[in-house]
Length: 89
Image (cartoon, rainbow, N blue to C red; front, side):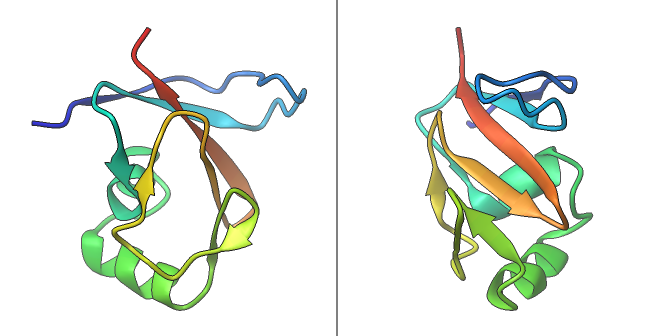
């Protein structure tokens, strides 16, 4: 079972103080699940709509796959908010 923990706003290594981080305990998290965890969307249906509508970027590039596997180090952006995936420490 995938367990993830949402962290508070944190400054990342590039100096972006608005980047939120989510920490995952497994090897990956799917994009739609990560968006829900970060509080960017409310449901899987909404995730599907915005992702397939080209409104989400993963690592700076538009990705249309809701099931895209994100691993620690990946970032995703929606409505100007960027979230970084981090691993369990």
